[in-house]
Image (cartoon, rainbow, N blue to C red; front, side, top):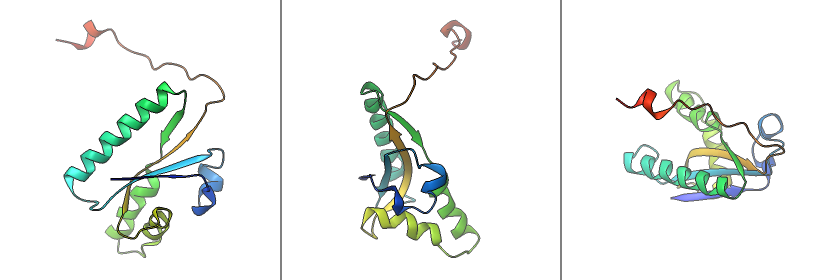
Length: 123
């Protein structure tokens, strides 16, 4: 499992629109993009990283679209533009991005998510 944190957002063409205010952009990459074990390990890594960041006061947000576009390009037989763009930040053509996110210290405290009482959801 490879976790790449990028501090130079100009590596990605859409940064000016979607992540211009985030000083950190991260990619979780795997050797085999369609291996179930790799997928689960990547998800677990994200969960642990996100929980740890929360304890440090760091806000993190998944950025699914850049990674999902790779599959869409392949599905429709289009040029693999986004595949090349998302591979370049890892510096190694053998690692494939499976999860992307941005991170920063929040400017204001987020509202907590509404929760139902346990008695309403446990049978």
